[in-house]
Image (cartoon, rainbow, N blue to C red; front, side):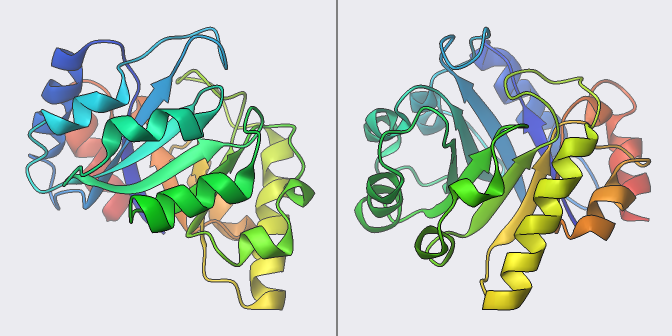
Length: 216
């Protein structure tokens, strides 16, 4: 199981401070997920994606998680970024999943992921789509806010993603975002998850200790 710290905020200064803090964690995180929310997909608003060009990431790669209407239209802001590794977007307000995958992989040359909100069925992702993506992200609760608990519905989607991966030989990671902590991570790992995106549990002064404890 891999752990990825997450940042959800509307302040560029706070985002930079969090990256500075994560850089002190031992072992240093390989990647961090930065949430991008437009105030329409969910009733929340965060930093804009163009911020990635001015961030000091200390060698930490960024995974951008777009919770926006028409994520394809937002991609121009991250073109030529040297810090972005993976672009993940919610499918619920996306007109064309194939067009999004093509632009991320072939236009921008980033890894690509698709995220399913709590009640979005795994069957939304066709076999053709699953064969071309690097990450399937399952939301542990409603997308858009940190600090929520893991909902049991998410476990069923994780199991479906793991079953499809095993049956067809897909290579995608199965990531879970929201509600991740020492009690829930074993649950999602047992269901088939390979990545835990962790937000609130790493917040504050005890974040570095919590990070270390998870690795131990």
